[in-house]
Image (cartoon, rainbow, N blue to C red; front, side):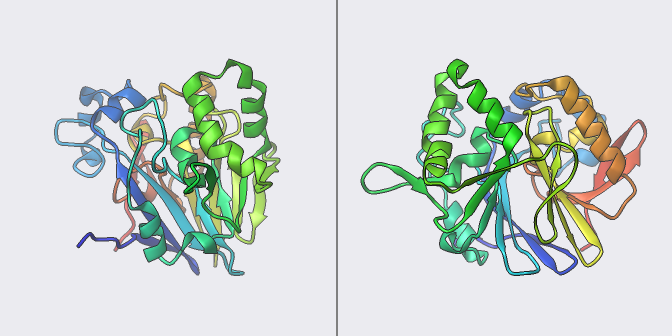
Length: 299
C-alpha cells in the first residue's frame, strides 16, 4: 500500500500540510538552475543528502501546501502540474498521479477548499486548477473556492498574450482560462507591501521570477512561516542567492528579491517552506559565510 501520509508543520495554531505530487527527474535541476553545477553544490556539505545527491545533483519536487486558518477557511497554496495536461516539458507531460487522493487523505477533499492561492501563473503551479470532465472539457477542480493571484501577474500575462509560445497558450487554455471564465479568479493588488487576504495570511511581493509573483506568509499565535513560491527554487540558492533560474523573467530583480527575503529571515524563528524543496522541505534560515543555509526544525 502506498504511504499517503502528508508531512506537516505547526505555525502557532495552524497546521500546514505538504501535499506531494511528483519528484522531478535528476535533469530538472541542471536545466532550471544551470549555475548550480555539481562542483558548486558539493562545496556545500549541508545540501547532501536531502537536497542533493552525493555527487551534487539537485533534488526537487512538485508539491503544494494546505491548511485551515483560525476562522476555519480551508486554503491551498498552488496546485502543481496536474494530470493529463499537454506539456512541452516531458517530465510534466500527461501525468497520472494520485495527488487528489493525497489531498483528500490529508483532510482536504477538493470540494471543501475555500481559497486557492496561486503564487504565480507558471505551468507547475496552476495545473490542478482544473481537471478533465467526461465531455472532454477542463473544469475547476475546487468548485466552491475563490482562486487568488496578484493583479500584476495577471496583467503581465494578459499584455503578452499575443507573443506567447504555444506551450504557454496551452497552459492558459487548460488551467487558467477555465477558472477565469467561471468567475472564480480574484486579482489582488500586491505591490507596496504585504497584503492580507485572510486572517493570518498575507501575500508578500517577491517579483523577478515573474513580475507579479508572491510568497505567502502565515502567522498565528506569535509564530510565522513563509511559503516561497519560486523566489527560491532550491536550498542551493540560500548558499548563493545570485544563482538564478533559466526561466526568471528578470534575473536581476529575482536576486534582489531573494537577498532581501533571506536577510529578513536569517536568524529568526520564521519557518521557510520551499515550494520545490524536497524533504525535509522546511527550515530556518541561518547565516553561513557569505550566504545562508537551511536548518530543519527540531522534531
